[in-house]
Image 1 (cartoon, rainbow, N blue to C red):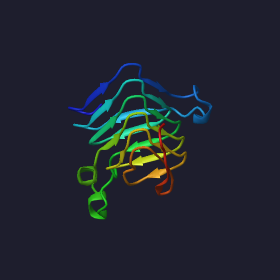
Image 2 (cartoon, rainbow, N blue to C red):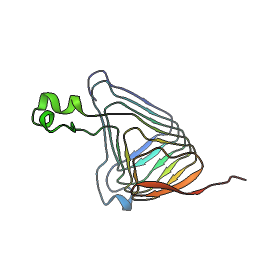
Image 3 (cartoon, helix red, strand yellow):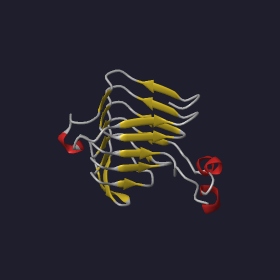
Amino acid sequence: MGRNSHATIGNNFAFSSGNYNPLSRNIKGAIELEANARISIGDNVGISSSCLWIFDHLAIGDNTKIGADCILLDSDAHSLDYISRRNGATDRPNAKKAGITIGNDVLIGTRSIILKGVEIGDRTIIGSGSVVTKSIPADCIAAGNPCKVIKYITHE
């Protein structure tokens, strides 16, 4: 954890890393918080061998499942300006960042990538292998690269 970073984790949190899930192919998971970053994980959340690299903030609601080998990254990690990238002192500080918010009862499929500034609404399903570059509303199934709503879910 980076300097002045903060993590809040709810009850019944499970984070597997390695051989627990056959879909992860023994890939190790990681949670990295950069300086001043915040992460909030709700109750009954499960994450399998995924990489969470947080520069700003990540909020995950209750009863959410994140599949094997997913990446959640709330920053470009490097400056988009080539001059800034040449110097370690200016590269990362000039990288764009924007937090990620994932609602309650969300299911994110294996090998999906969730990028900066994304909000995923409650009860939404993200299909495996999706690249989520823009926010996705509640109560839908979304998939693809870039990820798009395929179908809305009605609850009876």
